[in-house]
Length: 465
Image (tube, rainbow, N blue to C red; front, side, top):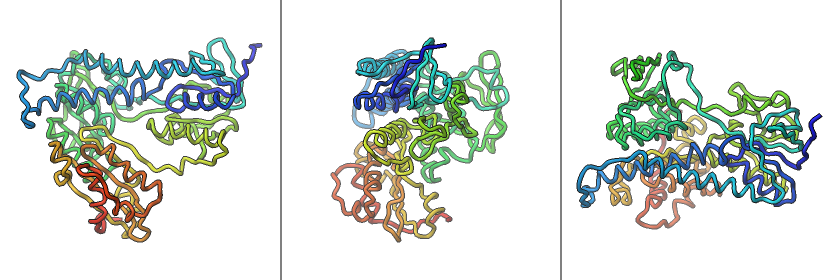
């Protein structure tokens, strides 16, 4: 019989929730075992936020260099992009973060790091390599990965995911992107600026369908202005491999039914890393999509086991994973009673310009609050800070309840939108009625200074409820 190694806590995975939880538990005097099977830091550090936004920065630099003449700046010669140098810069930034996470964990007192694949042997035992670990508290932070759509021919053609896209050292001559949401749009614009022809295929009637139609239309407009071909209402998508070229066949309302490209990026969603953890041995419940079922405090169906981050289906962002850690740590160590349902949905789309989103869209608000919804909206062409920077694409809008004066949500699609949105988000967390934010004196010239202006121009929503 294997000898059990007993710990006060076992953590599976080193994404955004696992390492800070290990640090808190160890600081509280508990013995901790943390397990990582591949790269420390999880998706964000290795294949998500940090490397992709580093590449976005390179793409932005190329774009602004081409526009230098608009600002009275002369640059002689053609603007070129060295994809090997872009990759080297991205890799170095990601490596620093990954090394930092591992160094922190290995330097923690009362924390032992195990490298290998973790599998449950029971609700209290986890096997990793030749070791069998035991604890009354187990935390799963296993993350997720790109999913492959069940489309005809997808198994016969080479394709890229968000992870393998960052291994490219040459810009594709023609990149076909399947999926018109966050991953697809960020990579599509990025590689267009690196020099690729880009076609984005979306099954729905518009891009980023979770957003309001005016926001989707504005995103479509600025992507098309950069020469990106967007194909909407795509049905019956299939693929062929013709002498090293990828052909995507689609049934769209407009355009050719065959799109020939050099590379194919599949950006149609993600799936949790829960299919090879031996969850059945622990009696853990999963939903129809493979996510570990948790309650409002991240507790699973088995007492003493929690699931945090992308594997629980309660958020697919770094900030939601980190907030999962904060909820669990507060409840276990600080006597708190924090819940997932206390947090306000917030996220960003890192196209250029970026979209910052907080709370409900106008459409969602109308469905929930009906005629009580008021909206303030303004094009970025009427925002002084955007005009000064020469970046006037997009719009900003805020949604409130006329009866309760509650701020229901906001979107800032424009320069600095990913930062300006926090003015609204913080006011929402403070449960401040909208006149409080309306009367705030903001600094000029900024994008944020227009938020009080929007609140002074509220009008009834014209969308159907």
